[in-house]
Length: 315
Ligand SMILES: [Cu+2]
Image (cartoon, rainbow, N blue to C red; front, top):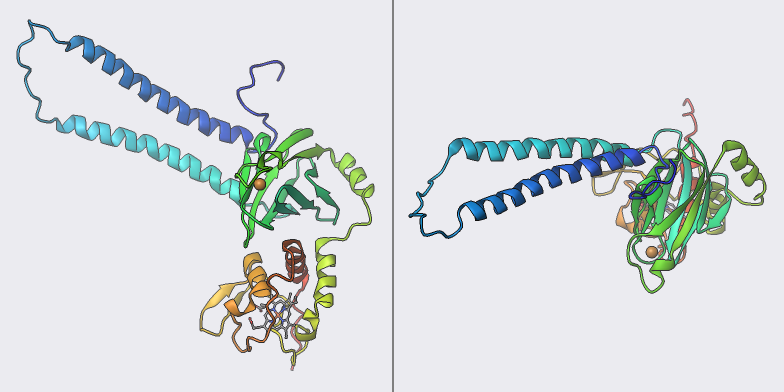
């Protein structure tokens, strides 16, 4: 919008302006109250300054109306902040169906990113415009934080678990990625760029970067290479728990509880299989902790998510 004073980063995603509106609203409310307090301080300190003509001042013991007003009015104002904030927060943490799935692994001190179609990048991410993009994030070492100020998008990247976030870019251009969690000596150099492109340019970019394997294809190779398939076969006599169609279902565990088979559960089952043992199975699965990188685990999880249940055979 021309040469204006740049108080805010650019608005380059669908929720950037929403975040700014809330921010301005909070600022406005604070400013109005701060101003009121300052004016009252100045006014009263002049009005009631030490003065020989002032005699002893009458004590005010309390005023019910006043008490109620200054409790209820701030409460109502707070509730508007809460309601508005919660509404936007829910939008920001719920990726829409059909979002493109990208994977992000943070590492001292770089970002490794992978496209749904397999292309890999370091510290750079090319995405199409006007298309919801979902990121699944994890870390190889310490806590990082994936921050794109121009999208108002920020998510902690935590070792040992998956976090996710999403955005839909609305402006072609390049936007800075910053690590927003102090992560060691070169934290300030853990930066990158998101390149938002037209769909046509994006397709061209993708086709110029062939030779990559999708995450689930790489996962399939790892699955065979690590001999997961010797136990996890799609056969009734398999020694491992069935993985076909397991994603998104409730899994019954040996201790009688159930657990939702989401990304985090699959990750934990691969690295520390004994943490949650599936009902009807012995904890014979080897521990893969330390044997697989986070990227490989992401790929295995991506592969397991593609395994669909076969239609039940009629007996
Ligand atoms: Cu970092």
